[in-house]
Length: 145
Image (tube, rainbow, N blue to C red):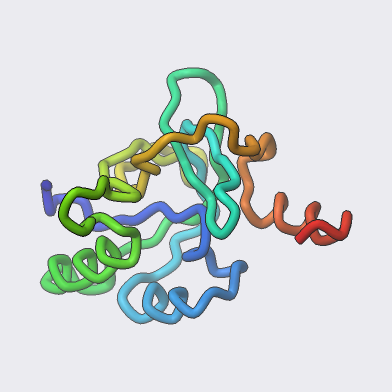
């Protein structure tokens, strides 16, 4: 994988507003650039969201981060790869895959890494808003979260 990209797009548990313990890691190695979006669809997998790339006009809302120290690329992304299930046990398929993606931030395009879901989403609830935080809040207000 190319190490020329030093940005990361997040859309789930790594979002600043999600308040997941893993966010402490993100905030240590990355600086928040701001709200951003990528083409794709989100699905509710139960304990976590799944993003899948699409060519149609569907968008995932998230945040764009910049790696603080380019010399820490291998360390920082290896930790994230492990968190996202990139390295499966023998005989298993990785949960996610990290790929470069075009991100729209502040009305401009840039490249960043994203973790796409690497398994089947058939039959899983589609998150039409494209926002995990909005979806979580809607589920909470309806008593389902």
